Amino acid sequence: MTGWLGVVSRSHVQRGLAGGFAQLCHGKAQALRRMQARDWLIYYSPTIELGGEALRAFTAIGRIADDEVHKYNMGGGFVPFRRRVRYEATREVMLDDLKDRLALCASPNWGMALRRGHLLLTAGDFATIARAMDVRGTAAA
View 1 (cartoon, rainbow, N blue to C red):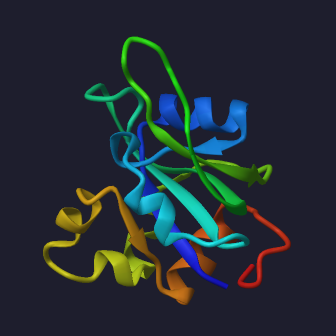
View 2 (view 1 turned 45 degrees about the horizontal axis):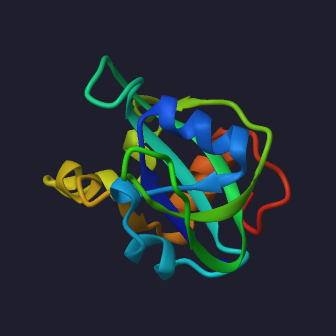
């Protein structure tokens, strides 16, 4: 079981939930290609809208559905890459409620790691976040 963290605004996460897809790092393919079918993806949303009001919450969790990374034409010349995801019913959890229990937040520069937009979670961090989000059926929860 591999767990990943994607950093995306809540409004963009909600689009992915509605459409059953993941789109990361401004539509680039590299992050999506790092994940494999059946890996888990947790979204962390630093903001409600891109560049908007702060949120700092874990907002969704899902399982990568297959091995296909595909392009999607959103119009206006923007053609990002996406992956299909089966999202779980869950609840949002504020980062501050878990921060002291996450290896992710242990280093002094942990916020810089989030700027990459996509990173591998330790098994312990994945389990901690998934449990807090009330997700059942994960290997760690």
